[in-house]
Length: 162
Ligand code: GDP
Ligand code: MG
Image (cartoon, rainbow, N blue to C red; front, side, top):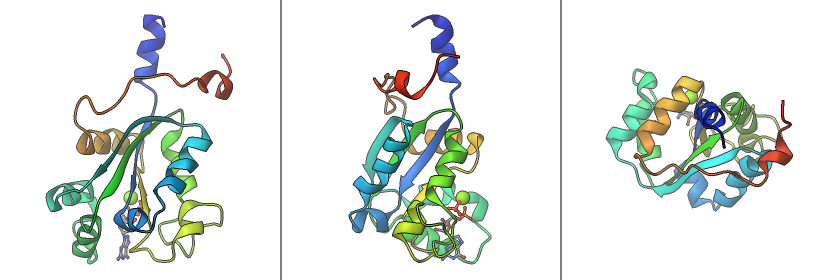
């Protein structure tokens, strides 16, 4: 790897994806991870984690004035979650499409929420809504050293050279 390509790879977009406690309890961890794997994004970090109320509140701080905020933070702290960082060009917007609409009844079939959930308050998965929030959320949920620098053998078969 040249310095140039290393430098370039640090700018590749990353998104924070989290399987919420209902997804873990319902045995959907493999199914949900599989959708991002099969799409062709690069897994940079992965852990099962029980989060604190403080962390849940910080993660969802933009929603702190919503009436459902206390319920939301109870939900996110109600059991372990699976934290993931996925990388790739356009990963943030593409992951949002794979996840589907916030309300699973409005989410298209073929999306994670469209296929696997029925209620907004139990919609099994989170995905960052912008590249900046991707960075913010990955920094919030992962410690330094928890992300891996690696190259997938699939990359040359997923991307052309120009
Ligand atoms: P997302 O980006 O699609 O996850 O949706 P938002 O950022 O708008 O909301 C964050 C999360 O809060 C959603 O995924 C839901 O779990 C939850 N949420 C949003 N709206 C409601 C609501 O009206 N009621 C309840 N109970 N939860 C909600
Ligand atoms: Mg959101």
